Image (cartoon, rainbow, N blue to C red; front, side, top):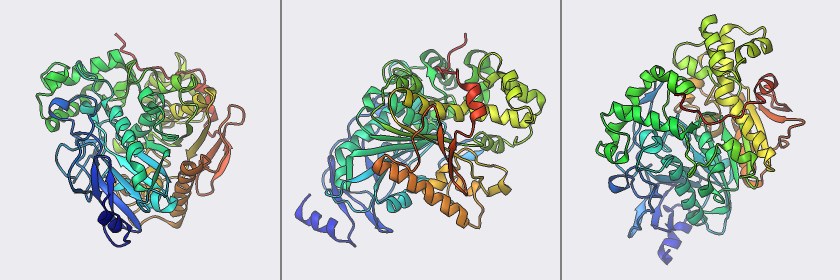
Amino acid sequence: MTTAESREAAAGSAEPVVRAAAGAVRGRREDGLAIFRGIPFAEPPVGEARFQAPRPVRAWEGTRDAFTFGPPPPQESGFMGRTGVLEAPTGDDWLTVNVWTPEPDPAARRPVMVWIYGGAYKLGHSGSPGYDARRIARDGGLVVVTLNYRVGIEGFAHLDGAPANRGLLDQVAALEWVRENIAAFGGDPGRVTVFGESAGAGSVASLLAMPSAAGLFRRAIAQSVPGTFFSGELARDIAGALATEAGLRPTAADLATVDPRRLTSAGEALGPKMRQYEETWGKVVHTQTPFSPVVDGEVLPTTPWQALAAGAARDVELIAGHNRDEYRLFLALSGRLGEAGEEEAAAALRTFGPGPDGERAYRAAFPDASPAELHERVQSDWLFHMPSLRLAEAQVAGGGRAHMYELTWPAPGGGGALGACHGLDVPLLFGTFDADLGMLLFDASGPSPEAEALSSRFRAAWTAFAATGDPGWPAYDPGRRLTQVFDAAPEVTAYPEEVSRVLWQDHTFPTLPLLS
């Protein structure tokens, strides 16, 4: 950094300038923070780089304005009636990071939190208003980084001629950028916490198991971990169906002939047809997304549960948890909340219940539950509750430390019918009640004092964990199973979903196989 740039960065009212490894960037001062948007961490993954691992970004001359978020990766237009990206920059520079920092002072050495968005591995953009990280950075006095990664076919289709899990490799490249550059923005590269929700939590779980991510972060927070990880055989078969929708073979060379923004139509076309593949794809057809991390033996050697139980992440401190009424959101978005009858409940129990006797076991364990309640419960357990719990248990079994939580506070939107549904933790954590999913989950009148208090507790716990490793409640152990319950009156208690835990205690969450 030149003397002039140093003076400019030190001036409280001037636009802050930081020299990153690839070149200088100029941010903005907003709400007491220095904010840098749309900084490239890798080359645009187009042309010869299409469907390949991310490549180091080329250096640039002069000072680059970092005022606007980078363009989102190509993605489908929506999910279960919800639209995807509405307004965003366009272009090929999808692989960018954004930084919120109290002050870009290299001497500050503040804790760093790196957010990974969810979206069924087929949607997402770090520039979404719901991921505005200013309240986290300001309340916690730390540095927050958000990142883009490839989703859908670009990031997760298992193709010949391309590495598996390219979206996860993008995340590793972003974390390498953090290691090399974050000190210049006031962060401590030795105190990095990754945190994510839904597919973002599945990504966090994957990073814990990936050799290429080892040493890039010290702590991890996984919010509502999905239990879907594909075997290589299943992933290749799904890629074949995706390519068929585009009239091509499932190879990187063939699919690279189609513009990335047009190729998303193949995923959109396959989605409504997935039930046709139930005999070969099994449970995945009920998730309405043909994308998940692939246990390919190289990028992702094993499932996260196997890796953690074997001690792969014993040196990383972990928070894992879920929301009480996870699956209710998907039922509401599909217009089927509370509508499942006896036949539909029985089919769900047979499909998702653990073991060959899952239906009988669930009915015996929840004798007073209605068919609609059983239908919702077993899918919440299979898709989010038990995978999240098992991640914490595997971490402890492997010699590491984990903290468990459950959110039970009901969303006020829609008269409270959604309960503590999937995604509610995101607007609570970021304090973005009037953006993205927050607009559905909260009343138009704005958050109540109770909601604001709970939001503050979420941020305080997460930022304290990032700074010290202690979120404010005891670590999870297989004896007491202490869990932080986030509600209007928070408490620490034994794991609240004990009945389901016992039902699932022998299930190992293996990769989803190709059935025939």
